[in-house]
Image (cartoon, rainbow, N blue to C red; front, side, top):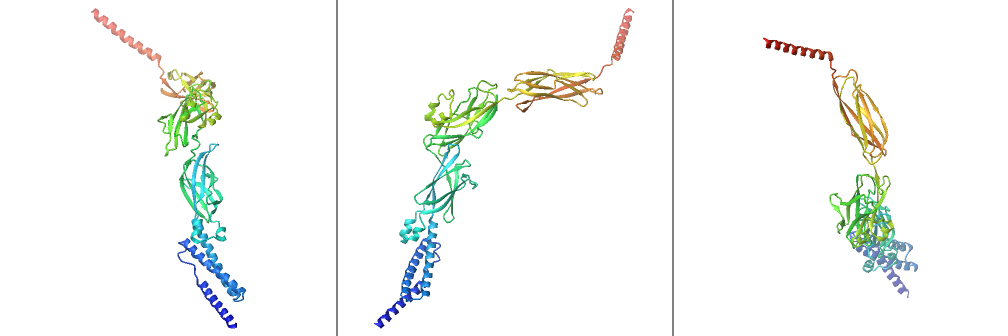
Length: 499
């Protein structure tokens, strides 16, 4: 009986020695494990299971006092290393296989007029079942690592220069589970049709993709916008409103352009972006879902009951689908409200026009050429006329005279000139006593204020000729001398005829 017990002890010691050597000599690392991580994970899992089994066996032997504490600790250390290696390999595979896709990116028009993007992202890793089947993994460690969840996903939208153009600048998704896509809503800080979606997730993984934004096809509208939505236009002048037309429709692609609430005295028409071709309708294609147009208006020369200076005129530009054009047959005669337009579900933009008059100063002179003697005075009358569409204030006349000349302007200042009103100004210029004979120029300038804006009239140039003084006694003597010669010739001729 004693010999049998000794044999059993020797048998267990031999197994322990072989197992210890096997566990200590088993090296699960392969230099290609970093390249083929899935196979490395499989190798690490096998090493983990072998060392776990060995450690459990060593614990049994230790409890029976068949091995020492040192041997148990050595087995535990080997098992711990195998466990850490297994966990690292498992994490490496999971992080390598994490993948996020953008399933949709829809650009739409917000109620406040802003451009927004609804972005849908999904965890498309989808490798959990394959890992489990390939590696026969179904333990608590695998489940605790949550292979179906990608944590801390950060999303932002970039433009061509890689600048963030989304608000918020960066959106965070705490957990993105497999099979459960999530939507993120962004406001576009820059109106573009192509963006770069930049993703940071998991263990610092990064991904960026350049995508063309889809248009929200459920609204069946054309979004109309204008940067120059409010303008001041002078009477008798023209103005252009730039229009950006962006299609958000899946059914209609042809739209009519219409203006409502604009007085009939104001002419209007639509042009293409070049301004050379008139438009009535616009047609969109799959490759061209944004178009540019120009609304050109022209104001009458004079204010009317509907076109009143300094009173804003709000109006609307509509983009009407073909199936709704009958609703706007009386668009030019009806006064439309914004609520009515919203109920009809058409694209529109509110614009504003502020008629502004402007004074125009005209100076007329009946005579601008004068010939005088050195001691005489030039007298010129200038008629000032307001030919504009607004009152002129603080009208002044100034004269740029030659050196040492004197001037007198009456009146020198006119308080105001109503539309079409005239006023006469008298100007007197006197040359100095030592003036030389010749021609001299006087520049006459006029100016006034129209609603605080300086208005200059046309300049007038007056030419003044200084004639030399005539010697009367010398002229008389010359005449007498000529008469005496003529008389002598006549007397001499009479005498010769008598002989």
